[in-house]
Amino acid sequence: MTEKLKIRALSDHVLVTGMNFRERISRGGLVLLSDDKKSEGIRPRWGKVIAIGPDQHDITVGQFIMVAHGRWTRGVEINGEAVRRVDNNDILLVSDKERDDETFGISD
Image (cartoon, rainbow, N blue to C red; front, top):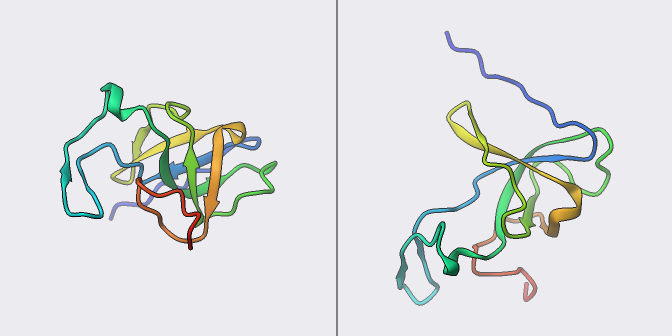
């Protein structure tokens, strides 16, 4: 039996999963090839919060955050998912709903 590893963030850091670095499909149905490590890939990305540090008071587990471009760690694989650490100052937006990489969630 494999036991799931439980992790926690320190200070006011946030741990996220689900950041998209693969190809995407636009709202119009166009396939946008992976732009990771290309100039077009310079953009913020959404991630799902899986853990918060004890000094984090603005974000809760389960929310989705938009992170400024490149302001996340490379990540480690835990329980089959890439987990990345984000500093509090690099969080641009917060949402209770999952967002596409193409939206800022302003028009809901």
